[in-house]
Length: 550
Ligand SMILES: Nc1ncnc2c1ncn2[C@@H]1O[C@H](COP(=O)(O)OP(=O)(O)OP(=O)(O)O)[C@@H](O)[C@H]1O
Image 1: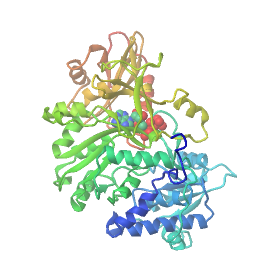
Image 2 (image 1 turned 90 degrees about the vertical axis):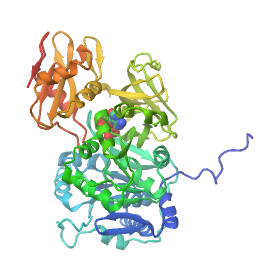
Image 3 (image 1 turned 180 degrees about the horizontal axis):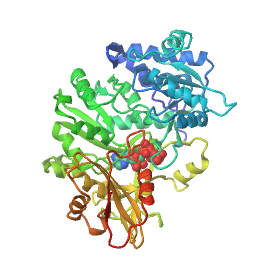
Image 4 (image 1 turned 120 degrees about the vertical axis):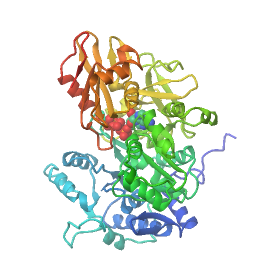
């Protein structure tokens, strides 16, 4: 036995890129990517990706060079997920909702060599390039033509289709020399601080892709609607996943309730992903935007805590919602609320409450725990004691690009990745996020989960969105301050406080309620609590016994 082990046949580097070759063989004539009236087959997508890889190499792109994309969910964005790493380069998808300054910082930080850009985003890229420091080599720009957008570049500029024409459809793609070779570079959303550049290798992406398919029980040949931006942590690994199962990728340039319902009906969509804001959008869609669902439509939600009330409402329409938890640093979801048959017997609100819990590790994940910050020991399974969620598995990032300190703080010597999320472990072994460590409110020594207070606020029939942050308090240190946007305006701060008082302990009830037409969000649709926290701080401390409204 001692002599047996790794050999050249069993230690070839794992990579998700091979899924595409297989898809071309098995599903060659089946639709791969649909966009408006354009329909590609898997053999066409395979050849287009090889052309892209070959053309990039002919432009001088080589192993480990960074190629960025500034694109909505269009076919070129899908193809870049294969074509760019098939050239040996590292794919960097840039969030299209960022401002020019941030895009410029990311281009500089990543040392990007080439950018694929959408016509509508050319002005943003131009501004970002102008902001690069003098002497910094600007990346080469390739415009991705789009039938629905005016072409803003001179005829002589290099375009995506011309680039593909230059490429070889029989190109022998550049395989990773090691499965640990970097494959993608994704910047985090910047919800809690400046975006960090997360680097994943081929092996990690291979593992999370297959794990996500198994965990969500995705069958062969699904019809997958791209409501989740592929720039957000590579669409939680599903660009590669859809090739593995021969799915049809329905691309949408813009996501609004009417286009989502229309696309579901027109294409017979079976699967889609979205942050809880997308669920809210579907649940609150006006009657004239809705279409009957053509069959079972499954939604995977992750990225922020889904309020039980929103889960309940979207399931009432007929959607079948799965709930996952992950971070840019894990490449996809690694914890999910694995559903038990016996829960089906519960009333709808009870089912939604259970589904709002983040759940248990996915099958491919090695270990998840919640640990006490001081002792490092697991917290008791009592559904009440809070600790930090830590993870261990093959899809944890290689690290943050050029940021050894942040990498060391997140991936520690004890073998855990520290998520910065605070949660509790329930007696049945399912975990539930209570907060991000920076968002916990400490009032008179009691830890208050802002998420828990928010979930009560979301239950109020007039509340559209809610976020709870700490406001300084002269006596308690901090008290909860709720920022609320309303569906209709006929509610007072006193009503909101009374609603909370009936449903939670007194110390958790917001002592300040601020109404806003809209709450500030990150480019991935998450509410920017640090902006609200600053606003709460600027209001000055609350005084003993006081409660206020604005
Ligand atoms: N199902 C979920 N329920 C609650 N929170 C979730 C869920 N899924 C993800 N999250 C939150 O999203 C975070 C991961 O988001 P992402 O990687 O996009 O960047 P970010 O953490 O928002 O940005 P930054 O790290 O720059 O502040 C998790 O740490 C967690 O706080």
